[in-house]
Image 1 (tube, rainbow, N blue to C red):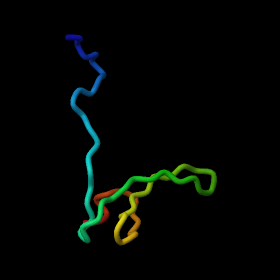
Image 2: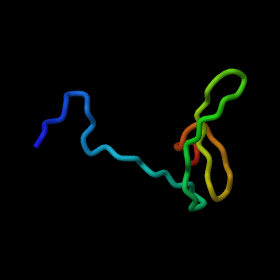
Image 3: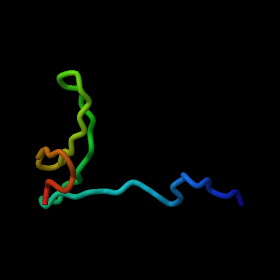
Image 4: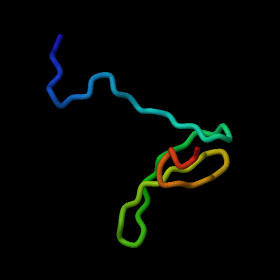
Length: 56
């Protein structure tokens, strides 16, 4: 079996975040005013925040 390099992330997967309303939070990247911005948006209630922990 091959060894992982020192910078590889073994076993790291994607983490799912959930809004208090029960919907899943999806991260999106949008381009506005000449800048790339990451936003978090709830699929169920359409609430928008800068990061998933803003939904608590």
